Length: 295
Ligand code: CO
Image 1 (cartoon, rainbow, N blue to C red):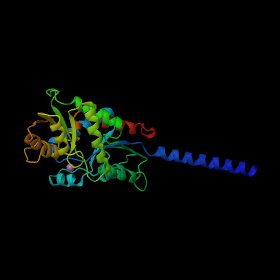
Image 2: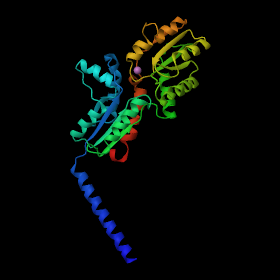
Image 3: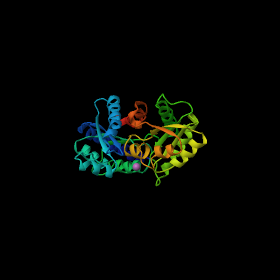
C-alpha cells in the first residue's frame, strides 16, 4: 500500500513538473493570432466585391486580428497567376503564417456546402495540427449550410433580399452550384424544400448537381409562372451566374425559361454580397474563435 502511495505521489510530482515546463514553454512563444479566409476562388473581377464584403465584416467583428486569403481552386489560382495575380493555396498560406510566427489560426471556409472543396480544406487544416509545422492552436469554421438551422436562417435571409419589385405571382429561381460527385449535393434538395415551404414560388436548382434546371422549369410550368427573378445561390456572382444563369447563350437558365414563355430578371449578386448572409459565415468563424485557447 505504502509503495502505491509513493508511486502515485511520484507520478503526481512528475506530472506537475511536466505541466510547469509546458506552461513555461508556452509563455516563451509570443501569442500571435490570425484568420485565414478560404474560398473556392473567382477569376471574375466583378465578383470580387463578395470577398471584399466578407473581409470587411470579418475585420469589423475581429478588430486587430490579421486576416489573410487563400483559394482552394488550383484552376482559378493558375488562371489568376497568368495575369500576375497571386493567391495562395490554403497549404501555402498556412505555411507562410507558420513561418511568420502565428501561434493560433482560425481558418474560415467560405464554401456554401460541406462538399469536396471543404473536405480538401479539412485535410489541409489537420496537417497543421501535428508534425513539423503544427500551430499551437488551429480551428476550422464551418461552411454556410452546416445544419438545418443554418439552412432555415439562410433561406429566410435570402428571401428578404429578393428585389422589392417582385410580385406575389412571380417566381424566385435560385442557382446553387451542386456536385455530381459528393453526397453534399443533397443540401440543395433540402434547400429546395426549405425555400419552398417559406415561399411556394421560390425554386432551387443547381448547375452541376440536383435539382436541375429541368426540375425548376417543371415547377415553374406547374405553377403557371410568367416571370422569374434569377438569383445566384453562390457566394460570388462569377462565371456560373454570368454565363450559365444570366447570359443569352442558348442553354443558359434565362434562355431556357424564356423559351418557355417566362420573362426573366437576373440579379447578379453573390450571397456574400449581402451583409445578412455574409454574417452567417462570420458567425461560424465566431463559433470556432470562441473556443478557449482562441480567446
Ligand atoms: Co463550377
